[in-house]
Amino acid sequence: MRRSRSFIPTAKEAPSDATLPSHKFLIRGGFINQHGAGLYNFMPLGKIVLEKIRAIVKEELDNAGCLEVQLSFVTPIGLWERSGRCETMGKEMLRIKDRHENEFVLSPTNEEAMVELVKNRVTSYKDLPLNLYQINTKFRDEARPRYGLMRGREFLMKDGYSFHSSQEDMIREFDLMQVTYKKIFTRLGLDFRVVAADSGAIGGEGSKEFHVLANSGEDTLVVCEACDYGANIETIFESEEEIDTLRAKSYDELQELSIEKRCSCGAELHFKKGIEVGHIFQLGTKYSAALEAHFSDENGRTKPFEMATFGIGVSRLVAAVIEQNHDENGCIWTKATAPYLVNIMISNIKDAAQVSLGEELYAKLKDSNVDVMLDDSKERFGFKMKDAELIGFPYTIVIGKELESGLVQIFNRRAKESLSVKADEIYSKIMELL
RNA sequence: CGGGGUGUAGCUCAGUAUGGUUAGAGUACUUGGUUUGGGACCAAGGGGCCGAAGGUUCGAGUCCUUUCACCCCGACCA
Image 1 (spheres, rainbow, N blue to C red):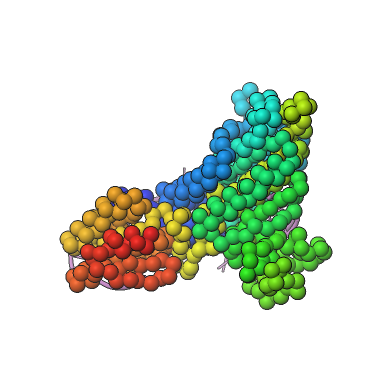
Image 2 (cartoon, rainbow, N blue to C red):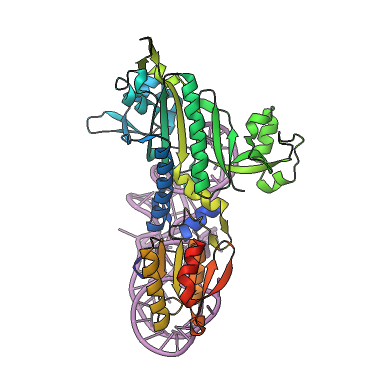
């Protein structure tokens, strides 16, 4: 993409109501804009990031044998009346009426719809297991949406549901999904922990949350520095009072505290804050029994499906990447999430030699399937650098003054370091780094 | 849902206590010129139904009523 042909409305100032780094920088960088309480538009850069994350989620799930489907976003209210969630979810479900005065709900989650889809279509143990998922818009009419993409009302979520003939097989799938989720978050380049959690209102036995570690996270965790152990404080402290006190503390306050208990590996435990980006539950037969979704087992007996459910907050991940990876100048995207991996900056667009090297390199990198931006705008050097840091390209190749002595620079966004490279070696050098 | 706050230019905000020329600044934008390695400088421009509706008044951004929207603290949710 050429900067001169792009639509990236960056801004010096963030709206005054943005408090989180991800909220500020995603707006200032021209990734998203707010459209209403808890409602966001994704502009070109934001859309690219969202799609990159979605693609990785899909790829790993498909590798693990899951099948992608797409359920309708608008759902008849009868579905929710039958499961009883009309009552339990209450006002979080946004209800709308069509021209015939029929009531509908904008999907906040899809257990019911997915069970209905499978019910009477899968009727034999021979067709099990089955793991269906979708990556689709959800709407939850939160009492108080806040923190930008972290807690929107409309958001993009991957929700998966698996169906099994036995509890053992359901647990096998649950474990497989845990491994798959780890692969996904690792590929995204995130520092995360899997923690045991209360299963809350959704019910079921086993439940694990995946948290991206970030100072601004809403959840308080205990994690081991040496191994990958982590737990939500609600599972390891007993008194409600103690949990509430800890929960109210900021990241900095928590660092002052020490924990008596030690990890099973022997190392010390520390408090951290986390952003919940994934959650997996063992559901058992809760929904299948309630909605009478049955299959026949080896002995011809009718049984409700054993189920599990798996969620990933895809749009929340966009924000979580930045919460974990930013500095005072802006975003620092990981290689897997960057809208463009390389930004070629032509320092002075009136300098023919700079332009010609920039164009040549841009064409070569594009041919090599590198996601590359060519900054051919008319701005000055300082402006372009600030802009590049705000947007957060992992690498910016600066083609500028030193080209006269045959040199260009590779600026590493994360390290904030520049490396001088001979102009005729820049292609091979950048390809090495990627 | 309880409590508090804010709506004025694309963005950040003055102006509202005490009603009174033509509604301001910075930034962004357009044009011209000078610049050209860390968000440049000079000059000239364009851009507003002062959130909306009603009312008081000779006169309303400013006072009154209603309403809509957004934000913050909490509760809730995950």
